[in-house]
Length: 161
Image (cartoon, rainbow, N blue to C red; front, side):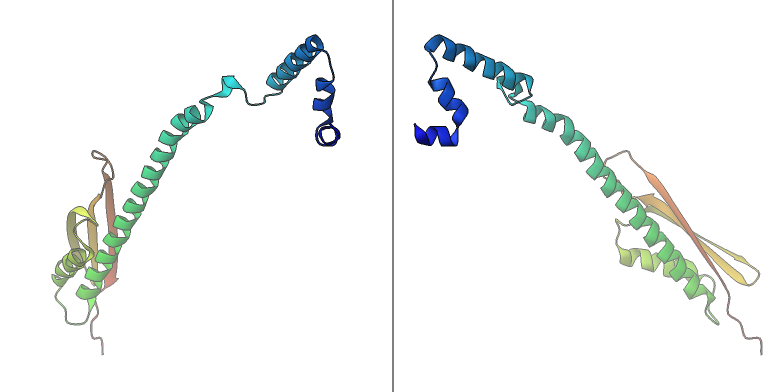
């Protein structure tokens, strides 16, 4: 009894009461716990319900992050291909038609999935070459298509001496 008093004095007092008083004290404690928000039988399954509500939101967020990453990767690949094509076409003595071939070779080396439905257009105006690489970013979910178009241009090198 001394140990019980030292550890939990409120329980020792309930034990010292008469049976009728003990029943009222316990029912009062249960009501007080329920009002204070303590976990009780009415909270069973709350964690599962919260998971059912939160999980689809988290899943959509993860898919959106992956889709955005694929879009930016496709954009970077298109820009790098356009720059590579311009670099090949603007070097001294190079034919401007090398631009499209160099961009196509770069896209083939980057992999077929990096940029889908790709189109490469070249324009030459005066002493500069402009190359545009366009296509579609890969989609995580079918039906979602994000277009990508990147342009690079540069002056054609020539001897002016």
